[in-house]
Image (tube, rainbow, N blue to C red; front, side, top):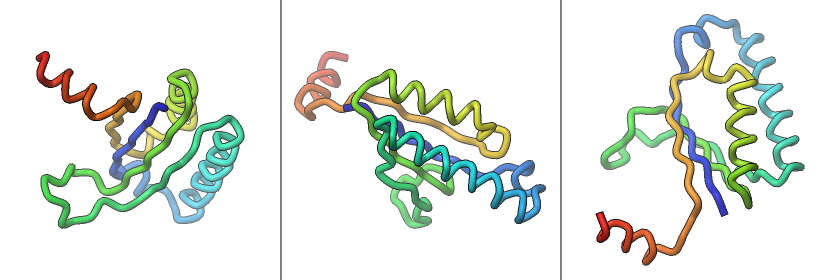
Amino acid sequence: MHIFIEAWNANDTWRGLSADERRAYMDQVEGAIAQMAEAGITTLGWGVNDDDTPMRADYDFVAVWQADSLDAIKALEAGVEAAGWYTYFHQVNVRSELRPAADVIADHVAL
């Protein structure tokens, strides 16, 4: 299984849109999420980053996705970019194939 984690903040371009423009854009995002689900890309959830999180990353929002293949995750990434998301949000991403903890711990030891 592969995961894709996004963390983002709204930028000035987003803040410059009217509430109606923001709602219309997010309506399109919701439609895209439904299409991704049909393609086997699961949204595990979206959230607001808690202010009191220890070692908090300086991003306000997060989303976590999963898919059975790297190709599906890459399709998600391409869809995010094609949707113009990065026009409105400053974002960082994390992508990984999930593996047993012992295997990743061994990777740490091998450094």
